[in-house]
Amino acid sequence: MSNFVLYQRDYCHLCDLALAVLAEARLPDFDSVWVEDSDELEERYGTRVPVLRDLRDGRELDWPFDATSVTGWLGASRRLG
Image (cartoon, rainbow, N blue to C red; front, side):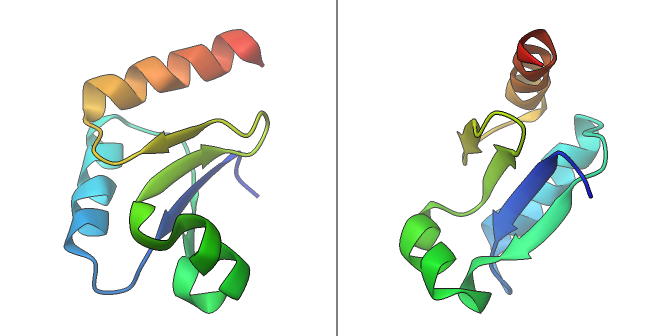
């Protein structure tokens, strides 16, 4: 299991863009979770997706983000963990 989760939706063009950004930022392994599979996640994330979450500390990075902001966010995760 990865330390990172990308909450997303099926057929979501912003989620597709987020996946490209995460590849560009060279995010280590992450899990994808589809919010429409859970009422709880649907309520929590609704229209916020895509959202990147660090499971170790609960920090979240909401869309829009780019490779630079992901890299900075990852750096903060490393300093905290």
